[in-house]
Structures are given as structure tokens and as C-alpha cells.
Amino acid sequence: MGTAISELVPKKEIGLEYLNGRTVGIDAYNTIYQFISIIRGPDGAPLQDSHGNTTSNLSGLLYRTTALIEKGIKPVFVFDGKPHKLKHSTLKERDRIRAEAKEKYEAALKEGNLEGARKEAVRSTKITGQIVSDSKKLLELMGLPVIMAPSEGEAQISVMAKDGKFYGCVSQDMDCLLFGAPVLLRNLAISGKRKMPGRSAYVEVKPEKIELAETLRELGIDRRKLIWLGILIGTDFNEKFPRIGPKTALKLVRENGSFEKIIEAAKHEPEFDYREIEEIFLNPEATKEYEIKFSEPNPQGITDFLVGERDFGEERVKSALEKLLTGLEQKSEQRRLWDWGK
Image (cartoon, rainbow, N blue to C red):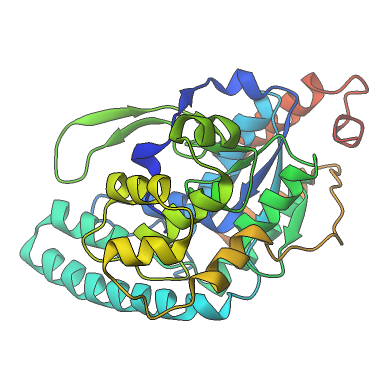
């Protein structure tokens, strides 16, 4: 997902306390995907209620978002709208990969290979309409703003961050930098100890801050060339150039003043129009018609939904709600979320 420029980008580890009092835009689909990928049973299956509805997303949204609010962070969730036409081939390829992974998952289960099953289960992760609607319902019951982007969620968040509505964009995808986000925040949804795929070892995952200005300065390029860099190694809207990795791509954009020259140097004529992809990132599709409004959480509504409809344990939900309400009170002079959110 996104463009693979992570190894080139300067990162700074931060604590959640660093974001105290700041409003952040959260890439909802990306974050929900992380929750569904990570919060799973021993056999790799996501958490489900008695009716077969996936609940890993709800668990992550309730407990992790509460942890962010306890640190004084003001989260606004932005959901994807209609995919760009150039993304259709990428989505089709993802569907193929998921179907293949599902077959391997079922085969691994039959063999009793739980480690292999879990690996393939993660690769088969898909966000369904039910997962999206459940996620929106919970966030609204928690009193948190939910914004619908006309197209890419990362594009909407990036534009809002440039307009000063958000301190930064919360996403694992580097695309936000190509869309012009001043600050990208990673690992907010997945920080902590995480098991390494295929190994018994664990790694500590910490929140990271990436600044666009610093990235451009360190790489010695401008934002247009950063977009060219992304195009060379592949984005959600185009296939990568063959035999070109991040370091080679950086060398090419540094040494050439036009993408036509890059094409000549790479000795590869792409089947797509790079100008169309460049335009997607330079002028992101985003709406100005939104409202960032925090409201009073609905504890009873949350309990009815999670405990009554999605089989959550009542005591765990009660504990999370106490933390949520306490966290909101601590961040508000008037001890009310609607005051804190203004």
C-alpha cells in the first residue's frame, strides 16, 4: 500500500506525549487495516462476534483511540471515498493476492501450521462494507469527527494538514508526503511490541514523525521530484519501473531535470502517462465541505452496540469507557469534550 520510499526518509521517534493538545487527521482505512491485520486469534482469524461480524476493527478503535485521547491527542478520522480510476488495476491485483492468500491460509490450517496460517491470514485481509459502517458507528458514538473524502483519504488529510486543520497525518503510507502533507505520523495505531513475521522474535514499534521539508532537504530534491521518485518505484496509480529500487530512483531524479530525461536514462518507456499521476499528487482531490466537531460521547450507546450487538465483554468496555471519559475530562477546562474540542 502506498509508495515504498520509507528507507530514504528521515524519521524521528516520538512519544505520544509529544502530540498532547494537537489535532491529527487519521487515515481511517489504513488504520482499520492495521487493526484487522494485527488483532487476530492464534489461527490467524480476526476477532468475530457470534454472527460472524469482524470485531478486530472495533477493538482497535475503542482501546487504541482511548489511549490516544488519554495522552491529550484529538483524533479526526477521514474515510476514503470513490477510488481514482487509475487505482482500479491496483485494487484488482490486491483482490488476486487476497484470494491466493485465502487458499494458502485454509491449506495451512488443514496442515496444523498455525504460524503459516496467521501469515497468510494477514495477507488476505480485506475491509468490507460492514467493517466500515461498524467503524463509523463506533467513532460517532465516541463523539469523534468522521469525514468522508471524495476520493483518497490520504489526499484529503494532506490538504487539510496544509490548510492548518491538522498538525499531522496519521498513516502508515508514505503517499501523504507525495500529496504534500507537512507532517506524517506513523505507528500511532500499532506502537508497542510486535511479533516479527515467521520468527519467534519481537520488535519494539515506536511512533515516528516525518517532516516533508526535512525529507526534501535531506534528499536534495523538491516535491515534484519526490513525486517522480514515487512514480519510479510505484504508487497506487502506476506500476513501478523495472529494475529500479529507491536508491537508483533517487539518483535518477537528482541527475535529471525532466521526467522525459529520466525515462531515457532508465531505458524504459512506461505504458502510463506520468503527467496524469503527477497531477494526482500535486493537486489532490479533496473537499472543503467538512466540519470538525467533537461531541459528547454516548456511553450507553457504545455499550449497547459493543456488548449487546457485537459480543464484547461488558467489564472491558466499561473499563475503556471510564478511561475515555477520564481522559476527556483531564483535557478540558470545562470537563466536557465539546469544550475541549473547540
